Amino acid sequence: MAEIHHFEHGWLTPTFSYALSVLGSLLGLVCAVRLRSAPSAGWRTWWLALAAVAIGGTGIWTMHFVAMLGFSVVGLPIRYDVPVTALSAFLAIGAVAIGLSIAAVGTRVNGVRIVIGGIFAGLGVAAMHFTGMWAMDLDGTINYETNRVAAAVIIAVVAATVALWLAMTVQRPLAILVSALVMGIAVNGMHFMGMSAMSVREGTAGGSLSGATASTLLIPIGLTVIFGILGLVYALMAAPTEEDRAAAAYLAARLERNDDDDLYEPAPQQGPNGRRMPTGGASWTFRDRAGQ
Image (cartoon, rainbow, N blue to C red; front, side, top):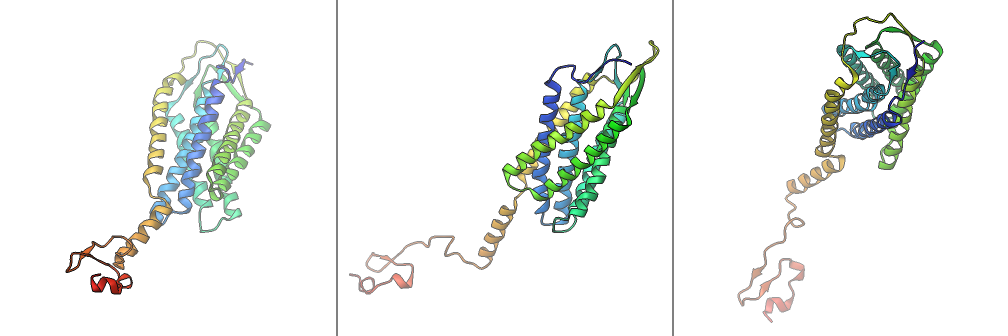
């Protein structure tokens, strides 16, 4: 068996991958808060898509790719099939979108829907992981230990179910932050459990490898992640909150009733003797009328 390293660059790659999973989970949970308070079906679809991209794209798939930068097999170069790698990204985003769409049906939190959505999302995340591993091309044969693969799938399903429950319930900023930290641990735990199930038997040297190296994919993926995160942050900052919509509706109702007394200060009026006239009938005293 070939010697495998999961932390070739020390703690740099797992630390960075955990930070990305927390950031993606954080943005996704904030989008989920907006999803629950969306005023229309169009807005619900919009926030569901953004939450799926944040959690599935940044929090799960990008974390997986960054962690793979620290993976190596001693003496064997590794290449990645670009279309299959892209497919794994769509699997992660699609799985989270399906899970969220199931869990978010209705106006009340439903445990059965969350569990069903978690099963779909978890199986999709596991499929993403092993599709990403399938994209690898090296001069050897990859084998997996069945028990650890099963453990990784179970962790994925449990983590996805917990993530959906958090997405449907948390709302306070501190709770969202703590939830994102927990989700980051679960996502990384699933990844490294799946990686620990892998073993490589060296093949015959001299075979040609096709695909791109991890360092080659790093620049386009990194730029995509940066612009994606900036886009998510802009969407969250630019979209009106529930409080903004309530304030706008209140102001519109006031204007519709022509209730200008509370919005504008009436201009002072001058009396015949040059003295200031009062603007309200109740404050117009006898002394005012007499000009004294």
